[in-house]
Image 1 (tube, rainbow, N blue to C red):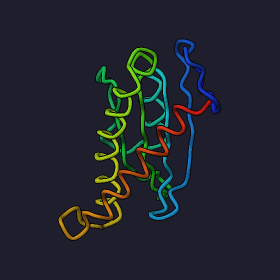
Image 2 (cartoon, rainbow, N blue to C red):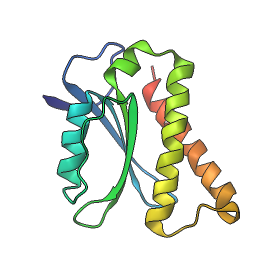
Image 3 (cartoon, one colour):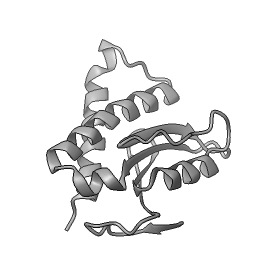
Image 4 (cartoon, one colour):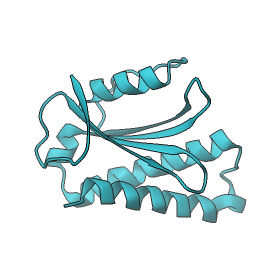
Length: 142
């Protein structure tokens, strides 16, 4: 299996994980977006975050992981399966990205010590919006 960084073709070669990383300018979290086989995502994420609990393959359409690297860097991983990317409609992709953005944003807030209650609801929803928009911009760029 290989990992590639760069543009996504509409039909993905088998066993290739496409990665794109961006730094969140507000909460200082590295956001790692990837599309490809779940096995490759799990391998990459477990190498970057070797502390238990390790990820396992679950045959999902999309997943997020919020964790710190051994060096203490904060990361939020967004993964979309190659199958979902190739067969789902754009509204379906948008829905799973928004769904995972809620999980990711909540995990980031917890990791950096912010609450996810009514007092921080506006900040949380703006972060979900940013995560969703920038991830879809990456997936759908021409």
